[in-house]
Image 1: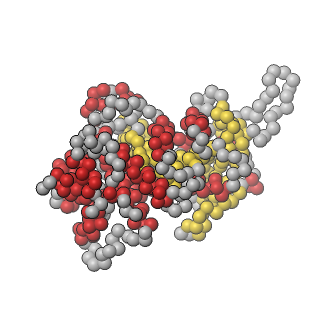
Image 2: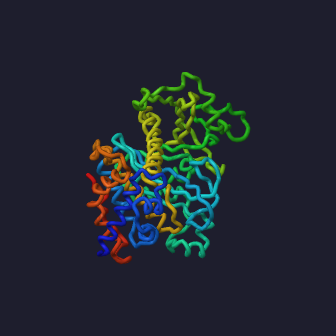
Length: 419
């Protein structure tokens, strides 16, 4: 069998697995389901000389073209993957936000995009802890490129923004409190001309500049309003201070947020000075247990920004969180069993593209299995998926068969061309 056809078959089978009903969508499970040679799949994901960078760039371009809006939101969200051992690239005990604790695992920083039309994940970076970045033996063992150096999770997000923002029309940058807690990250976004609304931890200290300073005593420097935690500030607000906003129509009726804002200066994360004047946005809503849940945000937006706009940006972040869940549950994002740098990025790229394929199918009102109404046998259903994908993987197959030098940049990937 020619190399191109063989690679095309490998890629097609990988996508059959990623889009199937398998509980664990790793190479071993996919090979077992379809009676395939596991080594071929492992080699394609773990060490084949195809470059993920161009594929992710093409993904960002197509997301921007198909669901882009001028006032859309770019969202950054780190996501942890619990892992055993310490041989896989980037694995160590570290903060895993999804688990809400420090545990052994890897962390990927994801770039999402949300417009009124849809939302999608467009890029990802593996967080390489500082100990890993300094360990030449482990770097060599996992194939970490020599050009890769230690970067904070905020640095990785900023790099993705600079790489992709030209492809994604947007007006806002949003992110979880790991992004927002960094005053330097907020300053860098502002210097880049970006308008942000970022989550911050509840223990962030702020000074409400709308509150008059204490009377001058006549001695020393004039007093300033003291810093206080944002959760203490919000707890002191009267019920009349909160404004209700209907965000969208949910399955159980309109989803409503309540918002209160004020101009503040926030103390930097190291407690040295303040980060300059910003807009504090506090939102609250009822959680699934019918208890009030509070979220805190800082923004460089003008004070007169409409509340419904602020609420839309807040919800955009949650939509991208839902996108991560969708990619994990429907496209095997977390089901990898690779140890190398290339293997991690290859699996993530294939999974993000598979998720975008699902998004496009949903937008067209076509369920993946709508063309077949007979047997519910999963293998038969997978054959339908296979036919849908077979003609769309040839370009990646050609890329797989080229030399490493030729595959440094990949301009496109046919599976992306579903419009």
